[in-house]
Length: 170
Image (cartoon, rainbow, N blue to C red):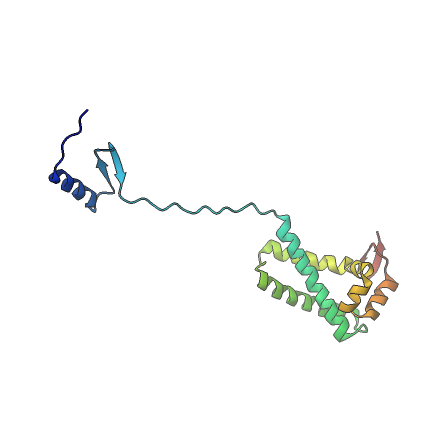
């Protein structure tokens, strides 16, 4: 097939069809199809790997444990060992949750699941945190006091859990 001979009028007609604001597309005779006037930019697809449930929750548990460890260090260093048990618990919990609020504000770990994991970290540290002191007494004597480390070593054994003041060996 031979192509039709086109002149300037054909060209101007095509330009007029293309520039018509009512048309979202125009028919191109050479291509034999409708050509859209505007093409949307391709949307960026987030290449995000599926996060596991365990990782962020474990980090939140560590934040809870660090919060209570900070609270215990403050209680031992500044309030001493002679504080009654109920007062010590209130002081430790207040300071632990204050430290957790600061850590989570910095790291944006504020969802309900992460908050529950932080509370679980505090509870785990309250029941089994003394095992860290028994495993690394020299290093944690710098965080706490050497007297506190000696008291923990005298009253507990390595694989144990404290529940309501009673030490249970594992």
